[in-house]
Image (cartoon, rainbow, N blue to C red):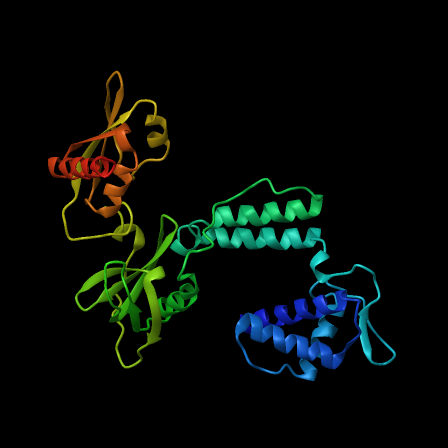
Length: 332
């Protein structure tokens, strides 16, 4: 994957150079530009060889990547595009490209129940939409939320591989509540996405822990330890909770009343798979769910403000009331 990424950087760099007709480009100029680009984008202080750039130009000229770039040498020295305005970035998506992509979509959808591919349908739809907009020269018709500031995503590949290969990791971690970093020897078990954040479920000493990827500082393999595989089934592990916080507490029946005007939203997108509609009054719809009481449940209930009333259990009702009172007092 890294070599492919480096090649793409070089292709784009050569393309950028040849599009600049204000100067003449020798092979050495292209070598220098590619070396500089790899340093800028990847932090790799390497010098690209003459042979590598020659092969890159040959690949760009060919049909293997669909570029068919009109690169020629004139005066036995300088490289240029013979077609005015040409760029490898302007290559149209072909019918075969669409067919290949659709084949890939069908393969990926086989993994729809795996956490890494939970939102894949939306991603694939966005890809198809992007292809359509390029083919038809029309604007995209789908816009999906994305968090450009989300940290820790670069750890996903390493963590995924560690789980797959059953590797013990040393993780430097700093939670929001901690004053300093902690060093943890953990056995990674599962990756979980919730509410646009990623979490790593690990076995640490004698218990499970959730580590937010955006709070991980470093990871390091620890080959001297034997991996403990707890054989976690994600559906089973999280079946009694909303979110990612699983504890040893018992499942409770949580009863809540929702204003009738908002009830359709809760019916069509249940809080939990155990949700049941119990009864209706003139202004309220009453539901209950069977879950462990955790932080994520409280956040969800509080997000509905005065449009929800928690009636059972009494301990949860009091906690919600106290938090709403504190919120009200903060405005005084």
